Image 1 (tube, one colour):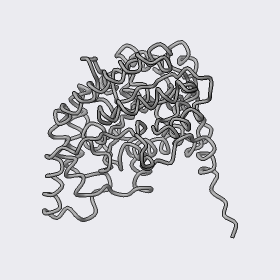
Image 2: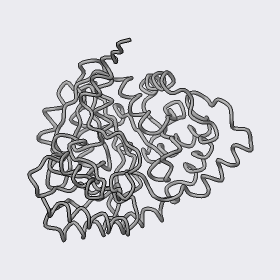
Image 3: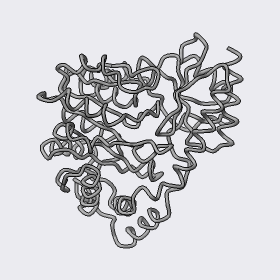
Length: 380
């Protein structure tokens, strides 16, 4: 039998630079994985045990556990300063499912989707799956903030703009003025804004974080996506959500129920405990990330072979290396030298000449891993 994959999958395969994933080979230090190395907080794991004992082992509501949706609606209402109800909330299989479902629910073949980049590589894959046309717009190289002069013309006729905030891979945190500019620039259009705020609770040095939810000019066109993975060290639990106006959420819900069905019942009860307790659960982790951020920033500054903008949020450093070699080759050489990183172009064309280093790992791992990075790059 001759198998031929669908045109949608062929589009994704041609465009995607995302690695297959999996554990690093034995002896390799991984600075590649965007996954907290902390245990999930005890109140969350205890809530899961209690949920199983209480019989939450059957199918859940397709939209998500009603109490969890209510708790999410209360949380986003506080951030936005305006009332959302549970009808605007869809609980999803992690943030990735919410992003993909939102893309499939809103983008038609040929539609333009604007991606300020470098940015999270899933977005391009989702655009290709929907048959849309990705329009990459570089951010400012000096600080990785939005380049309004370039972004403005690219927005004309766009169906969707995708904003990662704080940004994976650069750690940039957009300010309120930038976000309001985007909303005002899109006034009178049908362009939607998908805001992925997975790292909203991981910011440093008292950086003022303004959620897109709190920007009135964005409200009518906003699809807000969140995950419990990063804040609460719940990557393997696979719980996220999307919040939007009810007509938009209804369309996203239809896609999600078609490709995913209901999220695990007991896990949603654990997620409810996390949402009700709030980001205070993450405070010890954020303090550790800031210490690691400071270590990585200082270590890179001491190298001749790397330079990077200090990240204000998330747990990545997006570092430019001095060699003229393509990033794919540099990444391969680093792996051969015992350290795994992510190749810059995975996150967009302007990522060439860069690698992404994750500091969601211990200080000893970071010290040893950066020593290996320096040894390999100095050898180039």
